[in-house]
Amino acid sequence: MNQEKNNYYVYVYIDPRNFKEFYYGKGQGKRKDEHERDTRDSKKTEIIKAIKKEGLRPIIRVIASNLSEEQAFLIESTLIWKLRGSLTNKVAGHFKEHFRP
Image (cartoon, rainbow, N blue to C red; front, side):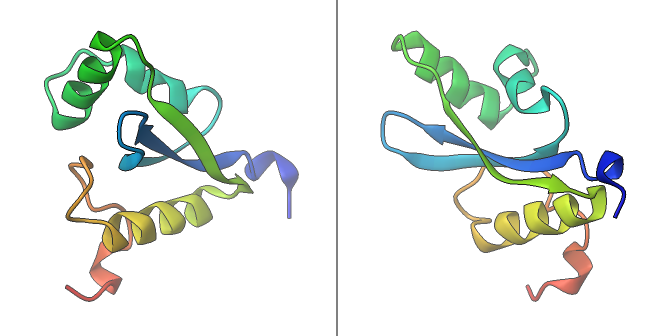
């Protein structure tokens, strides 16, 4: 495989106050850090603001790296599907039509 195309990763945001995972994403470069500057009104940004108000920062962990975009989409979608009731993700992710309801 061409290493240049395998520059995607899957990450998770964790609330340091209770260690609950609240957001999964896929990205490349500094994508995982961009949510902390997001100003849109969403459950995700609401949690991040509450964490920062307490003088903390969300815990951000890369779960898998050196992935193709398709691999990253599949891993992200699987994690969102598995934890769908407890996450702030608005979209179920790619390949969602292949998962059971």
